[in-house]
Amino acid sequence: MESTEFIKEYADSDGRYGPVKTQFADFDGIELESGAFLGPLRVAYETYGTLSPKYDNAVLILHALSGDAHVAGINEKGRIGWWDALIGPEKGIDTDKYFVICSNCLGGCIGTTGPPSINPATGKPYGRSFPLITMGDMVNVQALLVKHLGIDRLHNVIGGSMGGTQALEWAVRYPDMIRSAIVIAATARLSPQGIAFNWVGRNAIYSDPARPCTESDQGDAYQKVGRGLAVARMIGHITYLSEDTMEAKFGRKRALKDVDGYRYSLGENGKEGGEFEVESYLEHQGSTFMERFDEDSYVVITKAIDRFDLEAAHGDLVTAFRNIKAKMLVLSYTSDWLYPTSMSLTIVRALQALNKHVSFVELDLPYGHDSFLVSAGMPTLTRIVRGFLNGVV
Image 1 (cartoon, rainbow, N blue to C red):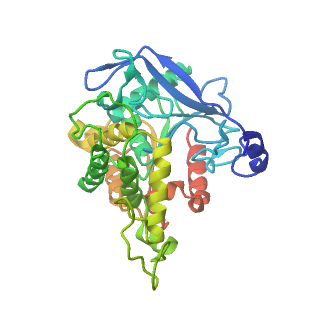
Image 2 (cartoon, rainbow, N blue to C red):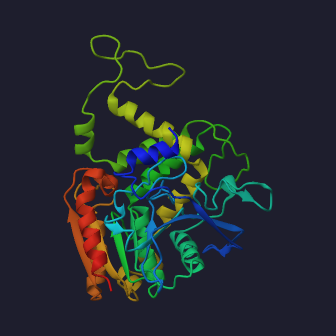
Image 3 (cartoon, rainbow, N blue to C red):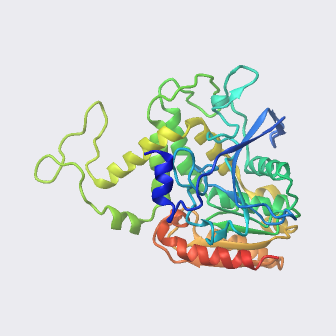
């Protein structure tokens, strides 16, 4: 379907913001927290709405692990932005009122410098030789972009999951640059269980043929081989859903069967065909992810998520939050077992101990960690976000 047809069809629904284009900002480079210098540096970003004459209405959107800069509207490929239900005219983040910015994170593979980018020292893609990065590095690059756009202070930073950890890092690292922050389904440090899931996913990638097999190995062969990234995505996707969602959506319904309702073969070429619908669903998720994402970006980003630990970096959360000036909103979901409400409450209690301006909402939705992206949860999220932003002065 051509983009113009897509825009016409969806003009009065989710895509009504209209067509948008990805823009690029180029910088000489940046010194990473590891001490390494990374340059040149390119940042892919999109903007929505109009920047006010006082440059005081900017809202920075921070995406989750597999997200990108295309957060709203319809891009040149006809794809609707991943949070379009929340962002646009008269929506939760009203583009008639706010100037919205979203960039692809450092280490990503959708426009910003990352493993697929060319290493100027070799003339080849970085691949697994891309330097170690942190959440702090990602936020520092976002700050470069904000300043490049002429903005000294953001009205708000908002994100879910990895984006939520970055919103928290923004409040800690740049207290004078933001008026408010919304931290959704996030944590001040990843749990051992979360680290374990990421480790298994990376090992699926490392097990691919012709790829380095340990985290310390570096190689410049740059081609997608094997299905490690697909398996990593399947593992990750299981953690994003809840048991109730999987039961309601799939139950034990079968997609393939041979005799008497059961499949008695193990598949061909060592690959199981997927007897149950939940297996077919995960297979689809893994296969489509391979088409749009990069395995080495997955490795780099999940390592940054694992290493994020504000308590370890500052001694404790109270110390970490001492200089925060932003008005804070923390949201969690009852069915999120990857980043459960207890993690959000740890953040809230540390902020309360310092008498910081913090609000907390736990939303009772059955969709698991991905609740902040599910359309059924958008009306409630819209009301909360709109009300909070309107109260920030």
